[in-house]
Length: 440
Image (cartoon, rainbow, N blue to C red; front, side, top):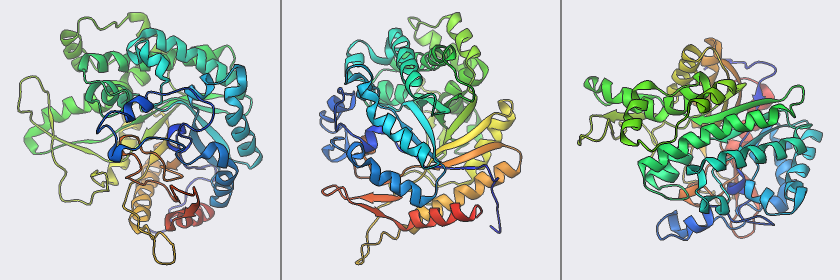
């Protein structure tokens, strides 16, 4: 691509999540993932988080990796279960130490308040199907913000609430593993409502410079054939607009709203909920982009669309189609349709079956190509007017990848499952050099 320089204040970050790197190590309560992992076939190879990458104990090593990479921002999540697992503020000790050391190193902390790891005790009370969980989450947000808000300026309430709802309560492919469209629709609404209540709860405590956002995993929807525009419309409402519109417009997409209210008359949707969402519009939007989705006409009457197989393009080890230009399309669509919001790419990456050489070097050229091409498209979107402020590859470490267990490595740094030794992959050196240069 020639010399594509990014702005001087661009956030060159990297991402992780508490369950993926901390696992269940240390003093924390049980999450929905421990019982989910005990279900036969729920997680690849029967894996469980365990100590994951043991980051609670090995944080100093990971901080040194961040320093060596040269990132100026680190996106991590705060385990609600870890906060609940100790008396008083003790559950925040690990995060206090993280934040202090990040700030001292000149690395901006970007804290996520929820990344898919609901405490199991709350799930047993109804989880995200229960409106009270939204109020409990607001209390959690205020507690954490009171403790860390003097050093953390940027906050993400939720990472991918759509997946929490529609895969956690709908398809059953994520914890807690329920299979009910009614439960999924209700959970999605409570998750979105909890964003609004969390922002409201922090408002009275808000410090100058604090900013609150949400991170959504979004995917351009492509019709499988020219005759599939209608199913593509419905798929976009379902995959993208169902969370985008309430967060950024204060209302659900009307067409799909009519479908869900007809199918699920017990859904507790209140006018004041939408008022709360309208008053809590994010200061910035996190965009998680991994792939696009292709759709065609459904076989049955109850479905509005059907997912189609990807074309012959390259795919990652997860089977996801590699389509970098989709990021450019997505960022410009958000800019055009949602009043020019400030954007961060908060997760973008790929799993490949990395194989170390005889010298122990992981030559992950496919990952470098993936990141390079997606950064080219991100730069093109910024050049075309999108208010893109940063890019955070997923992920810092090879950790516990949810239903994939440890079978799909996304990290720029490999982790030996037995010794916890960290080894830089070639992509980590590439990313370090890119950050130093500031341009592609």
